[in-house]
Length: 145
Image 1 (cartoon, one colour):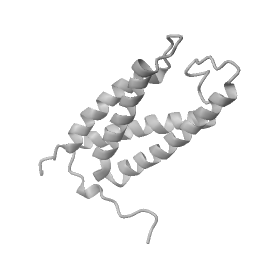
Image 2 (cartoon, rainbow, N blue to C red):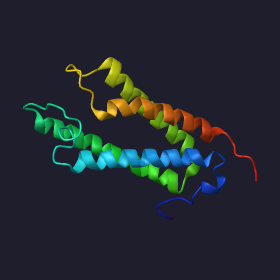
Image 3 (tube, rainbow, N blue to C red):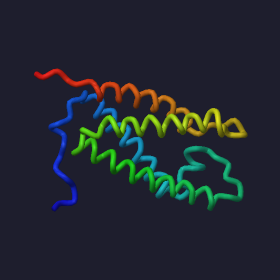
Image 4 (cartoon, helix red, strand yellow):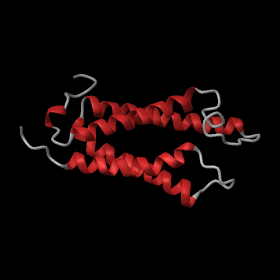
């Protein structure tokens, strides 16, 4: 028994564009995960320009925690892109849900009290829509050549 089951790439019938989009989302998940985990402030100040006040340690801890989950999710996404493309629709749906909820929270449910939106607040609605478009492509079967 091996660590990873055999690849399912040969059975994937959706659009290769959808896999490429998931690959971009993979980079867009792993890179922030590494930043949140390993940048001294987790990116809270130098990237998001958040005023952490006297709660810098708490914010850094929360960013590191988020970074850990992003790295884990990103590695799962990478496995799908490289070996298990039949799971592409599922992971695109998960990205759409995640980013849709992030957009809802950042713009409607929990908008910043100071009016300053970090970069992710702008990227999340766009990413959610792109994920839905790629999901539709991943569910359309390619014609046999």
